[in-house]
Every structure is written in structure tokens, then in C-alpha cells.
Figure (cartoon, helix red, strand yellow):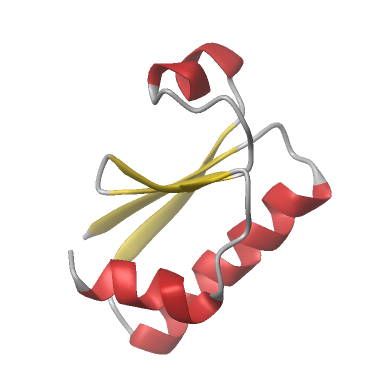
Length: 79
């Protein structure tokens, strides 16, 4: 199962990134768990200073921007 985390406090960009990640998982048909991390301390543990951020299998893939669904799909496929 692919572990995907959305780091952010719940702003509209965080919600959009969550939606894109969930759509990417659905379209790929891979077993994955998408979770939201809203705790500032936990977010900072990833070294992220700007949200939203996308973490796949413990690795920060994007921070401070919303990647395209195609980018997210590529990152999921390589894990």
C-alpha cells in the first residue's frame, strides 16, 4: 500500500491537493492511503515550511505548490 500524506492546515490549496491525490490513486487503481497532516510540528518534521506539501512513502515530492495530477500519478507509479 502506498502511503500518501497531504501536509497543510486545511486551506483551499490543501483541499485541492488532497482531491488531486485521491483522483490519481483512483485512476491508477493502486492500493493507497491518503491522509491529511495538519499538526504544524509534524509538518515541520518533514522540513516543510510552505504548504501544501505532498509526501509519498515518506519523501516530500512537492511543497508550496499544487502539482498536476499527472505529476502525482508518476510519483505514485515509481513507488
